[in-house]
Length: 143
Figure 1: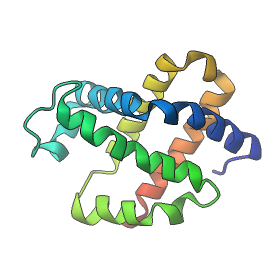
Figure 2: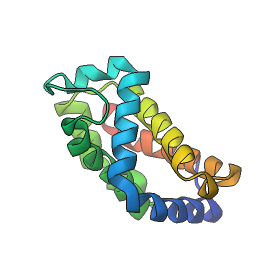
Figure 3: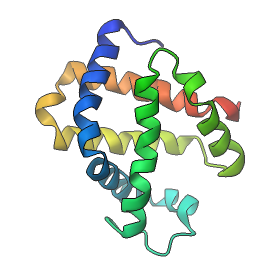
Figure 4: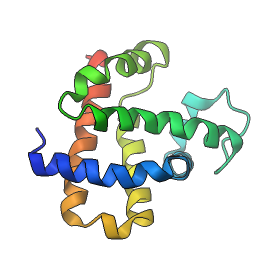
C-alpha cells in the first residue's frame, strides 16, 4: 500500500490542525485506549494512575503523538523515520504490535469527534491508510 499525492496532502493538512491540540488529542486518545482496550494497560503498569486524564496520561500523551508527527514530517519514507521507535517498542518495551492498531483506532475516533469539519470521508480514508503504514513502520523491527 502506498499513499497518493492527494493522500499525503490530506494527511499533512489534517495534522497541521491536529498538531495545535496535540496535548488534548493525545490525552483523549490514550485515555480512550485504556477504556476500550484495557489489556493495553499492561505496558504502563509502572504508572500509579491509569484513569482518564490522569497526570501520567497527560504527560505521556504528547510523547506518543510526537511519533505521529515524525511520520507526517517524513511521509515520503515513514519506515526509515520510525526505525528507532520500532526498535524501542520491539526490544525494550516489548509491545504487542496489535496495540498500534488499537491506539490508532482511538486516535481516529478522537480526531473525528474533535475535528469533524476537517475529517470528511476522503480525509478519513487518507488518514486511515497513513496510520496503517505507520503501524507497519513501527512493526519493522518485530519481523
